[in-house]
Length: 440
Ligand code: CA
Image 1: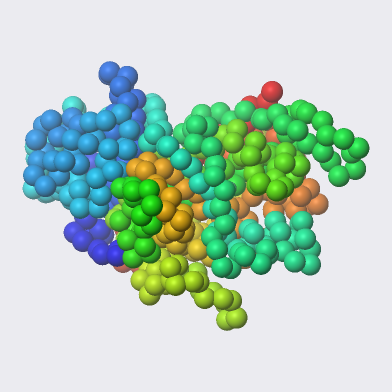
Image 2: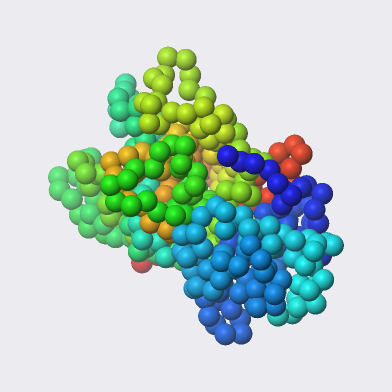
């Protein structure tokens, strides 16, 4: 797991100058995958982010700069989404990453040829439309932050916030794949059925408790056949990479509909993902021990336990959430930060989530997406939803314009950014996931 190689060398620089900025999200050590609408052809095309440019993988392959062990992976990038590449597996992903790194690094083996063809193989990120990275067949959303589960549970059951199963089993529900959209698309306020506690009967209308959920998503690589579970030691081979996920939630709809089968229309109206998928290999310098369970917590059952998972199952990924209301944008104000949280607050690792998901024999397929669940940390500054920050309306957020928010308002823009930094490693970013809420 998580081995470092030449592509992680913090000393590497790219001949694409913007990739060498200290605060660039996409230095040569990152090389995340996405799908963009090619400005010339309008075709959906697989790209790799580098500085403020996108490498058109198919064009680069056509120029002969990705030949050799990367052949199969480069050819898989000829598709209009990442699913064929995701289906291949770690050896191919790694070969392509190494070839791209050598083509884009200063003085790399194939850098001269790549640089000579730069007008044909690079597309400026600015003004280029990003598309969904994968055709997501199935979407499962977990509930893996114990802080979030405790905060929300306390609102429902003050004396007994955590359900008895929580520390034994990674909780999840099956989400809706068809309504997952990419950053930049708007989010329409959903209608639904609600019943306030003091109302006699339910009514139907736009949600009045519009919330976001700060999550990370991971995409499945090679799938598993129906009936053949993936063990924890194999789980890493089945995960392609990470993106940012905003799992919008209508709390009033959720409160009325969720028992006994869990969330349904309160979640399925939309989820936003960031366009770039950062491969697990790029995240190797930021792997950490899994969440340390406090003394007295039960150990996971055997199928969810391994030394490797415990020592390297965690990821040090910072996620910042900020908001800009319509009025703030009109007044030229910068977005204000609502919270900064971190993947290390997850009680279950993504490997335990995937293993648990297949433990009954359920088959996963390339491009399936899983969410971690809202990532809240232990402090007031690291809460992953406005439900928690504003305490269900008891402590509304005051924006610089004087506007107050217990939940989100029409015209609000929500922006999630994520990044990794560590001693001895080049910092990398996961980009951003943003959307403006449209009224109805
Ligand atoms: Ca969620």
